[in-house]
Image 1: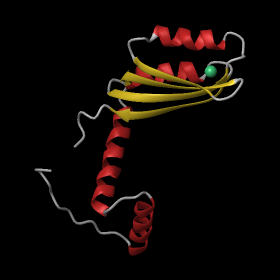
Image 2: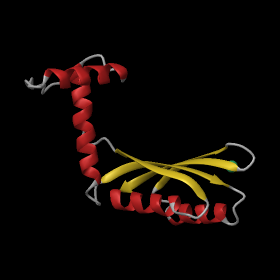
Image 3: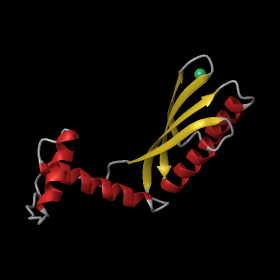
Image 4: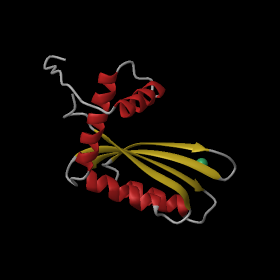
Length: 139
Ligand code: NI
């Protein structure tokens, strides 16, 4: 890191104890790296609020493939957005349940719309979108 700046932070001792406990549980070697990750996370989350910001998202879907036309509906959504969907992973969890993970890249608004279309499809038992950053503006 070439532009490293040191800052002092005043914290309540009890709050600092809880923070140290938390970062130890999460495997951080020191407070500085934990602070950096917290700040990056806030910056990334803030960027999602702008519908035009570039994001990557992973959508996890669990569904029963025996539900009539469900596979076709999910595939229709994916083909409608083939430019944004980078990759899909499909795992047959058991005789009837499927797990699908889709990686989507695009503007935050578009990624959310695609994810919502997939997750709200009738027959999807559980769906979740996890957003992340394309990494360009993060140090
Ligand atoms: Ni399957």
